[in-house]
Amino acid sequence: MTEQFHDPAKKVNADNGLPANPTKKKHGVVVGVDGSKRSLAAAIWALREAKRISAPLTMVSAYTLPIFPSVAVDAATGGHEDSALAQSCRQILEATKAELGDTEGVDVRSNVELGDPGTVLVDYSHDADMLVAGPRGRGGFLGLLVGSVSRGLPAHAKCPVVLVPRGAEESRAATDAPVVVASDGSEQGRVAMLRAAEETIRRSPTCRLRVITAMAPVSSAVEWLPSTVDERAMFDELREKVDAGVAWLQSYFPNLNIESEVIDGVPVDAVVAESESARLTVVGTRGLGGFTGALLGSTSQGIAAHARGPVMIVPYHDDPRLHDRPEYGPMINQDPED
Image (tube, rainbow, N blue to C red; front, side, top):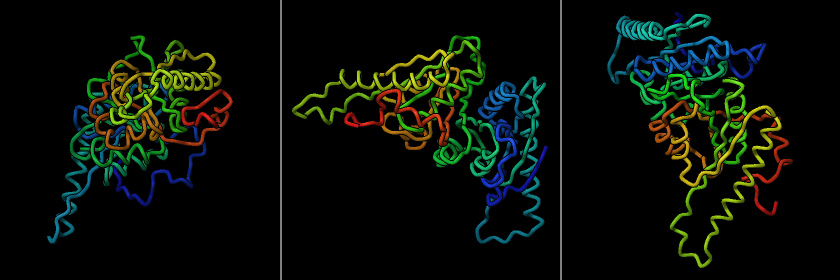
């Protein structure tokens, strides 16, 4: 078990110090642990993922020292407080590891960090395959994904962030459940589609990928307009664009079984409903209309609080496969006259 002071100015892997082999990440699958049942659920899911991709599992517990305004605290007192908190984190990590079950074949690491939990995990993300956490917790990670940090972790992490609700840690491999990706036609959404396809292939040759796009009901605020909105035409146009996107994705994954659906309903509700049975639900960090801000704005708390299965939030990066998307037909983020 390692223990270190976390200096936000010295990132675990700075942008100018990338690993020699970018396909092998130093920290593998990183999971935030705080001793709660929810963080245990996240750790169990993270262990299975580490086995799947043959990567180390890095469990991280972070703590911060309390601040006493206008009170002089001598070095001995401060050192005792630091030592007690660090020891508590070590005990939490040891207890969590004991409850993981079979860890054979996985390099399980336990790291104690002094620092803000959100900052700690974001810095670990520079050299991690993914970050995993429960949507709620206690102590160091309390509110990590349901409070103010919920807007920061998915937005600033350099690798995918997976939220694992309590009760959703068990494998769904025995079912016919697909991997689901929510697409809204944005570049971020297309990056999520590519990652979702890769995640599907990693799970099994027969696993399906389900691409969903939601069309929110026309607001009653425009019902007074003299010309009625042709919702059927809007739906058909969206369907055509989704089909074009699927054709583009299929060109890079010709052997993957891909299905798609345009859902009539509120986008966030659609994601939550799909997460109940999906092996994994994948979304981008930002988007256009349907899923814009779904995990970074006000609705982030709703997704985190109500998701019924693992949700992966994929950060944007300039994937060269994005460049030929226009060749496959109209795009959702494209005006009809373009």
